[in-house]
Every structure is written in structure tokens, then in C-alpha cells.
Image 1 (cartoon, rainbow, N blue to C red):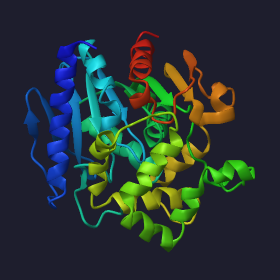
Image 2: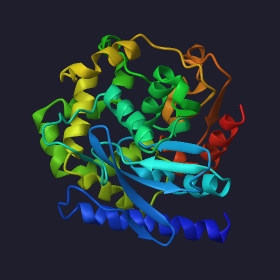
Image 3: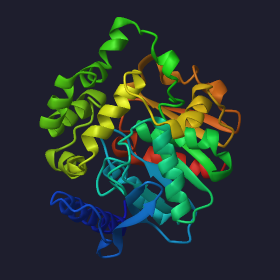
Length: 331
């Protein structure tokens, strides 16, 4: 990667570190902070004041990149400068419960259900006056991007979804998996207990580092790489959002009535008609071939398999993820 791009990356993520450090001191609203040409910005959008990073020209084709749990915008630290160098305007928001993103009201439910996070992202696009964007993500971010593409196709130019079509249907989710598959979701059952809430609250960083190692066993990240992301877990709503997300998936926590209609549309398994690329990796196991969900994509579509890569595809193979964004734009 050219040295100029590396310099931009260092300025960009230096800003992220400074802004996240500010979060540790209890601030609930933040002003824009900057180092060099890159900034972590704040904007009111829907029920949130969203912290987000932006790279590339302001008038470039917009790309919204969405992280998952337990990750943050640093997952895109190599992807962002690649896309920015190609002229894209890259937006990377902290999801609710991460980084400098804050709820505008103490009275708002700390809700981690899938529809809420998708509505957050549409609200962010509205606040930024982005009518249409390419969206891409992994883990929670992939689910969110897929929901946006299915329910608001007029807002989505193209989709890149790691692990494919992963929208949750609560009724289907109640059906048991084979024991070996259930083992992989151990943390969901842990979070269903009060012991799990206390354990995650007390050992957030240790817990999340373990998830990184289990989900990406071949990724040899260093302590500094993890620490940059771990700063975003200091968000005062982080534990509540994570616990609610997984309890809601197990139908042991209620969602919010205002998202009920959207959830029913998601439960129905809506098709995705926008141009799409799905990416599988070693994390996806037997589902890596993408055949189980290929029929859900009715527009121009391609499935790619990355061997030797774990769950955090953008950070483990930024070139492949960035290429998928550029390629789907050309569909």
C-alpha cells in the first residue's frame, strides 16, 4: 500500500483513539475531533448521537461500512484508505453501544434487536443527506446491511455481506441445532444468565479477545490491535446492548413495539434485489459454499469464499473486502 495511504490511515485511527479515550472520562456528547485530515465526527441521527469516521472525498460515491460484535470501526482500518484512494466517500459508524455513539435520551430502551440497528443506519444516512449508498459489513454489520438492502432497496446501490443472508427469524431460531453446532454459540447461553451478565461486565476485554481468537484462529493480531478496538467497549451502554441482542435472539427478552412491523417483514425472509456479493470464510464451516441462501438474492449476485480467513474478514483480508465493494459498484 502506498506510504501516503498509510499516513492517512495513521491520522484517521489516531483520531479514533483520542476520541475513544475521551469516552472513558464519562462524556456523553462529543465534539468533532481531528488529527491531520481525518476526523471522528458526531451527528444526531434518530435516537442516537452517532460517532463515525469518514474517509475519502466528500463528493465521492458513498460507502457505509458496518462492524459487528465484538469489533468496531478499526476492522476497516485497512479497507478505508483503499476505497478512499479510489474516490469513495467511506462512512464507518460506531453501532449503538460502541465508541462515542450515545443515546440522546436516558429513557430510550437499550435495545440490540436487528431492526433497531438497521433503522439507526438509515437514520444516519438521512442525517448525512446520503440518498443511496453501497453498504457492507460483517457479523451484526452484515445482518444490518442485508436488512437495509431487503427493506429499503431504493437506498442501497450494492451490498457486500460477510456470511451471507443472516437475518434472524425468532421462531426458526427456537429450533435446536446439532450439538456440535450448538457448542459454537456457547456465549449466547452464557449471556442468558445473570452470571453471564456479571461475567461480561467484569471481564469485557478478556471475553472479547477470546471471541476474536475463537472466531479467527489463524489471525495473529497483536495486543495493540485489540486494544484499539477494546477502547470502544467502554461505552456505558455496551453491555446492555450486547446482552439484549443475544437474549432477544433467544426470545427471552422483548423487543420494542415500534419495530414490530419491521421485524415481521424480516422474519418472512425478504429477498434482496440489489446487486450483491456475499463472502464466506473458514468461520462459516459447512455453509461456506453459500448454497443455503443463494436463492435470496435475485439481482446480480456473486458468492466468494476466502480460505484461511476467520470471521473478521475486513481486517484479516482488507484487499478482498475492498475489492468486493468496488466490484459490486460495477455490477
